[in-house]
Image (cartoon, rainbow, N blue to C red; front, side):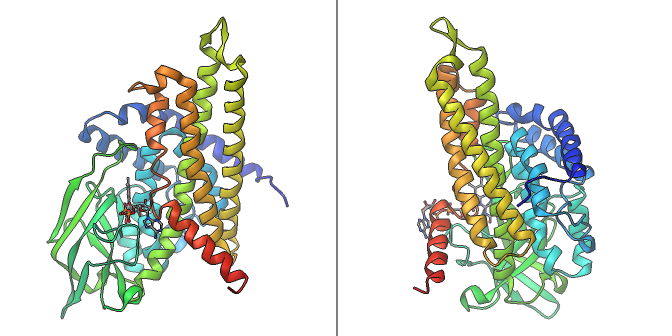
Length: 388
Ligand SMILES: Cc1cc2nc3c(=O)[nH]c(=O)nc-3n(C[C@H](O)[C@H](O)[C@H](O)COP(=O)(O)OP(=O)(O)OC[C@H]3O[C@@H](n4cnc5c(N)ncnc54)[C@H](O)[C@@H]3O)c2cc1C
């Protein structure tokens, strides 16, 4: 097995890192406490820059405006954004990658031209609206309804915790087109200026406070026939495909948070003095840093294995993504705990980077299928393999 990336890939990532450190990283701390207006403008400007740099389109196929790059290569650039600013990463990835996966793969060429291409260029922002207030972590519990009319569709329902819900230009919405369980769900592209589309309340988040997350309320929302993505009643499969990519992204987002915890802890431990010496000289502190290094390396390897499994369409790719998500997200929470400990009183104080990362780190274990559900899926997969 060869772990070496092509020289041109490494050069491109280094160049991208410079851009991200200059344009994205400086906003990470202020986005945590700024006004909604400032947050939304700053994130939007960052998405434009990430679009211009080709980051948003890199893993998509050319017919959807993409660059056709490998998921494995995408994880390298994505880690840079996540390390620099978790809020920007969540907003940009949900607003392009996760929202565009289904229409880019299963949608019409008109949908790709109208929505996917401008979104991957960073010109407009999307949202992926699956979760419902009563459905929670069960993606099949869809109560939003789409009724067929003579010239299109009418949608009614409420979607909750939608990343970019308060700012999106369009949302990919899962709605029920038949009572037939997961086999009765379809996906629709809903423009934010459609009649009957209303933005609901904005969530006051614990972490990722720069991101705009909120409800979307659809009341007799009239759409044309061209709003349906792919085939009627096949939307659950499309949504599961998008969710797998969202889980890979959640794992990378957590890896970036873990990286940031290690980086800031190292810097702090090399400068802070206690008992007459730098705290990094205390063995307990250096062991924490060693543990952080160990866990970020393992998380990165699991993510790269999962991305590679997706690139080669391995039959076990979904399990590899679940493993990467569980490990990377749970590691990030542990690393953030250690970072706060190394920062001591400063780590427990509002405005310190360790305090922000501690809050940011909690999301990964919840988002796009909590750790418990990933474990249920992994256990089912293991049982299937032994024929139980
Ligand atoms: C910041 C943020 C951004 C989000 N962005 C989006 C988005 O863009 N689009 C979107 O559609 N959704 C989004 N979500 C929703 C997210 O994916 C859900 O919050 C998540 O799936 C969990 O749903 P819930 O919060 O209703 O948890 P619940 O279903 O109420 O579950 C609560 C807890 O119960 C446990 N649990 C639940 N079910 C099981 C089970 N079967 N087995 C074992 N334990 C279980 C878990 O510990 C879980 O955390 C976002 C959420 C947040 C917080």
